[in-house]
Structures are given as structure tokens and as C-alpha cells.
Image (tube, rainbow over all chains, first blue to last red; front, top):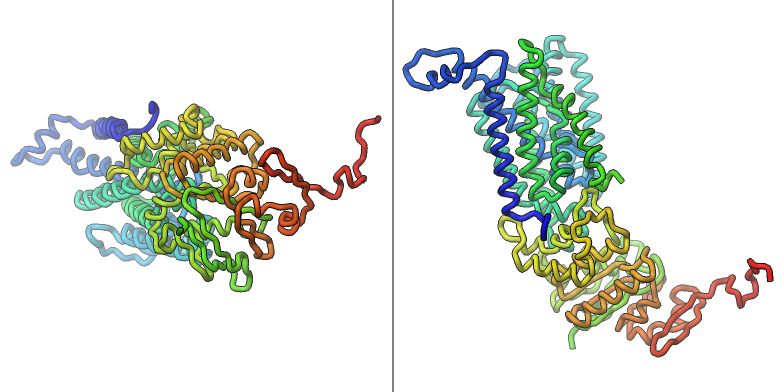
Amino acid sequence: MKGQLTARKLVVRAAAGFAVLVVVMAVCLLMGTERVSLKAVVDGIRPGVAVNPDYEIFVKVRLPRIFLAAIVGAALACSGVVCQALLRNPLADPYILGISSGAGLGAIIAVISGLNRTFVGQSPIAVFAFVGALGTVWLVWFLGRLTGKFHVTGLLLAGVVVNTFFSALIMFLTLVAKSQQVYATIFWLMGNMVEEDIIVLWIGAGCVIGGIVALFYIAPQLNALSFGENDARSMGVNIARTQIIAFGVAAFITAIAVSLSGLVGFVGLVVPHGVRIVFGPDHRQLLPLSGIIGAIFLVVADTFARIVVAPAQLPVGVVTAIVGGPFFLVLLIKYGRKVSWLK
Amino acid sequence: MSGIIEVEGLSFGYTPQSTVLKDISFKVMPGTFLAIAGPNGAGKSTLLNLLCGMLSPRSGTIRVDAAPVESYSTEALAKKVAVVRQEFVPVFAFSVIDTVMMARTLYYGPMGFESKLDREIVAEALEATDTARFALRSLASLSAGERQLVFIARALAQNTSILLLDEPTSFLDLKHQVGIYDLLKAAQLQKGKTIVAVTHDINLAAQYCDATLLIGADSSYQYGYAKDVFSVEQIKKVFGVKVFMGKIGQEKFFIPLGKFAKDGGQAATPLES
């Protein structure tokens, strides 16, 4: 029937989206405070030629950073889609189950403890944030289970309680920390793209893309789950398996995103809703398109963060919030009538 | 002859102290229409949830197609039993055809998309329930009666031999009530489906169903042909309400008579004579 999603339509749309992503990344590579000559960059690739600054900026600074923004954007957007689907709550985002406060707590502990050893090329902040994020999701999941078999409300409440408690701990630790340390923590909490090792980027990208593929694999089950657990079960969906895969993968890719870039807000909320409003709620389409559009969104936002107040740089989390809020409002006003929960 | 659903000595309670259902036994023959009737709180929906494996019995057995219901995996049971619950409207705006297509989730290909056969089955279900005309509209934009038709279409598209329904006509107007029972009866007669519907509408049950299980709030029950189970005395006993029974041709109907029924002499005269 006309207007229905088919595999072919999905492939065409995803390919078009991917092409736009590549173009956007290419354009953003050329933008920045320094003018970069492409000719010099091409010269720099040739072996045996003396190091030139254009090549250095282009390949060692901008390319990894844009690549990182794309990975983080895709991870947060897909994770947001899954959290909204499983909790059946349009206000859910990747951080709702305590990932943000857990990662934040890990980060501030790393800062205060003054560790400076690196693990797998990662600073202690990133490692502690990653562990804190996953540990907190596990804790929230465990507490949610205590409240009943598997109740969405219990899980949400456990998330709120843990978030509040950990935020209190973060505030306490901020008070006892030295001002230098506090600055590093706050900068991290705002969400920030830094130049990462290319190896770390490849690992991160592999995990995130693998995670998104796994989520796509359970997309039909997520559709059925939108009608509640009882209905989904009657339609033959294995609820426990679907929920564990979905939450586990969403938490994992969010933890990776958070440990690479801090707490970048709004992407996981704005992008899924934007895609849903324009393309509909079918998760088979929602997941891949949200991933691609999340990547585009964060690449553009980070380019703004680099050049708006140059030579200083804004944390990208500030840009996503400032751009994302009004953008979301425009979408709501324009397409609001299509969205059932607004009624 | 063995039934497609066989319940033996079934008891259930939500807590160890309470008992909702006590020692119930009955058989549903393939291709028949069973109504489960009774007052609120008698355990009708509980029984339905036991039949579809959502709850586990305290004692007794439930067999679906000769095998115990708990021996089925979620997937295997969904190939035999489809359930229509009291409606649940999702927060996100799925269209009618997307909703009905979800019944085929089990049968999707490796890429998560439906086959041509799935599309034909869905088209047939939409046609049968007269929902094809608003197939692309969002569920949220439909009336309660139209939405219930969509959920029945979804259950039909699951292509199971057994269809369980929990109060399919509550909140619906007369036209939709009759429309839904006509639809279910047609599915029974033309497709040979076994239908089990929980209802407290005894008139519709008496008219459409072959067999009736009448459950009382005190865990008593009566099982038999609809025409035998429904009687003035039984209804008085189970529902605690005096009724008048009338007949038109072969159809029995019941009208409840309350304290202020006009023949009781307590009714006021609203219009001046």
C-alpha cells in the first residue's frame, strides 16, 4: 500500500542520508579558524615531503574531531530512540536511567583522585566515566527489578532516585575539590569534543556501529513493544530478551559516547523526535535515520562550537542545547498535529 | 472428542490467601464460540490471562492443542493463540496498517520486513474488519469503536486457530457492539476459528455464543450451552439482579429490573399529564 515503509524505501532513504552526512563532514572539514589549503593537504599525504601545518591541522586535528562528533551523535540519537520506545515515554533520553550522573560521578572521582595514568590511550576521566555509566545503569536496572517483575514505572523511578543521589554526591565532591579540578570537571560535564587518538576512534566507531546494527535487528520487536508488554507477548515477542538487548546495547553505546565526549545533551531527545515527526514511528526506519541525522547534527553543532567564538571554543553541549531547543519547538509547532501524545 | 482448549481443576489466586478461581474444568471444542460471563471481579480476565499463558495456575492444567500451555515458547504460542485486550493506545502515532502488520512480526524475513504473503494476509484482515478505508490514518485519530476493529484486525492477521478477547465491546455503541460480534461470528463460521470472549453483556453472549462459562464472584461456575446457562434464576444468583427474560423467535433477551422499575410503583412522573 502507498505510504508504507518497504525495505527498498528504507535503503534509498538511508543511502541518501549517508550521502548528506559525508557531504556535511567534508564541508565542516574545510571550515575553521585557520584557512586550510587543500593542495597543501594533498602534498602532505605524499611520503618524504616535509611536514606542513595545513596537513597537520586537517588530518590530525579536524578529521578526528569531526569523526568523533559523528560517532557520538549517532550513538546518542539511537540510544534516545530505544529509551523512548522501551519506557514508552516521549520525554525519555539516553541519560534518563542514570547514565549521566554515573558518568559524572566517575569523572569527578577521577579528577579528584589525581590519577594520571592512561588506559588504552584514554585519560582516567574517560575510563572512570565509562565504568560509572555502565555501573549506574546496572544499579538502576537492579533497583527497578526489585520494585516488581519488570515495571517501566519502577525503572523510571529508580533512574530518578539514582540520578538525584549521584548528583548530590557530585555536588559534594565539587565542594571538597580544588578549583582547578572543579573547572576540569565542569568542562567535561558540559560535553566537549577533544582530539582523540585515531585508534580510540576506530574502536569507538566499531562498537557504536555494531550496536546500531544490533538494535536494528530488534526493531520490529520494539514496534510491537510500543503497544505494551502484554500485547507484544501475544504477538510472539520475547519480552525479556528484547528488553535486555535493547537496554544493554543502548547503555553500552551511550557509555562509549559519554566517555569520549562528556555529557552532550539534547541530541538523544531532539533527533529521535524530529525523525519520528517527519518519517513516522516505525523503528526499522527510525533507528538508522536517527543515527545518521544525529551524526549530522552533532558534526554541524561541533563546527559551530569551533568557530563561533574563535579563537576560544565553546563546549559542544552548549551549542546543542541552544540550537536544539528552538529547533525542537519549530518541529513541534509544524508537525505537532501528527503526534498522538500531544493530544 | 478432545477440545482445542482443555482446562482441568484450575485454581488461581493473586496472593496465597486469596482465591479468584477454584477448581474450574471445561473443554472448548474446535471451531466453537465460548463466552466467559460474570460480574466484575469474578476472575474473567484472570482466566483469559491464564489461558494465554500470562499467568500460571496455582493448581490444575490448561492444555492448548493437547499440550500444556506452559510448554509453549512465546513464539510458538503466538502461532496458535491471538489475544485482543482492552485497548492500549501507544504514545507514538502508528498508522492502522502498521499496527495490523505487527501481527506478522513473528514471520518477518531476516531484514525485519514483511513478505508478499504477510501483506496479503494483512490486506484480508483489513478488508474483513472494514478498516481498509482508514488504513493510513493514525490510531490516535480514530474513535474507540474503530480502534477496537483495528485490534481485532491485528488478531485476525496473526492467523491463529484460537482468538481470545477481553471485553471486546465495552465502551462501544450498539452499532459497533453488534458489528464486532458479527465479525467474530463470521470468523468462526467461515474460517473455523475457536473464539473465547470475556464479556458482561449477557444479551450479546446469549445471541452469538455456542457455549457459556458463567463465573460467580464466589468462585462458583456453570458451564454449558448458552441457551441452558442463561436463565432468570442463574442471573439472579450470579449477578444479584432481578431480570425479566423475553423471547423473540429463538433469541432470549434479558432486561435488568432495578429497585425503581416502574412496575414497582416508585417511579416519578416527569411530565404533567
